[in-house]
Amino acid sequence: MEVESYLCFEGRTEEAFEFYRQALGAEQTMKMLFKDSPMPMDPKMHPPGSENKVMHMSFRIGKTTILASDGRCSGAPKFEGVSLALSLPTDDEAQRRFNALADGGEVNMPLAPTFFSSNFGIVVDRFGLRWMVLVAQ
Figure 1 (spheres, rainbow, N blue to C red):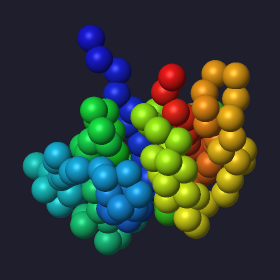
Figure 2 (tube, rainbow, N blue to C red):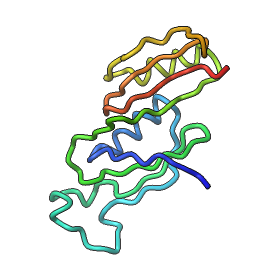
Figure 3 (cartoon, rainbow, N blue to C red):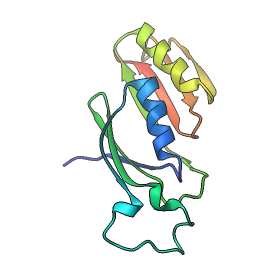
């Protein structure tokens, strides 16, 4: 059994992937646009022009697969109550990745030593996705 995260970027999936490619070294493994589906698009669910948006994408960050979609292409992704934890091997790597994720986002808790990690911090990236960055002990 495997559990994978499926994130809806509401029309910004390709932009988000490119950001994660640069910030975290993400690698795309699959992408299907709405226009590639054998099923006709429902205009009640997707605005005009969404045929070139991402129906389904798969990408890897390290050993983890992330699934993503543009959902209903509303332009406003909401990731309430969800965080992704990014475990890194060194303090330098944690700082570098934390800073990259913070570009255009908001630092909720600066990266700092804690009782459970030599460095831990929380950042909300430019898409509204919260990341808990820590150094694995």
